Length: 147
Image 1 (cartoon, helix red, strand yellow):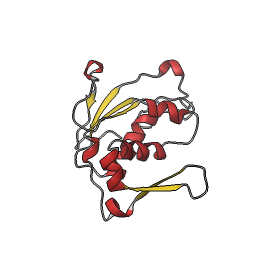
Image 2: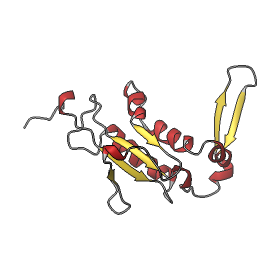
Image 3: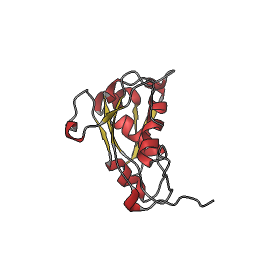
């Protein structure tokens, strides 16, 4: 029996629409990362970028468990001495509501050359409106979650 090895010409990209309203952040981000990498397809090949496009709406209305709103911090450093800055999840949601989900998905993707290309296929919107109606995205419901 031969193993299947995919080719770049075999890749067919679909558009999927996810609604983040009321979803748990981490579990939701894993589903998005799985679709972006193409691991949900039977033709998955590790060295071929066979993932799909993902549109996320209502990204500002996900939920987290426990005391993460006050205890979870995002760190960045300016490069200068004592340049470490920290922002809580509550503050990050107030200033940049889509960045929380974007960082969660990015950190779940493999750290290789394909990470930036996969992140370009992720479109996140804080509310229910998005400009991708022409692509006819497939709506992913709660009961039949892809991946």
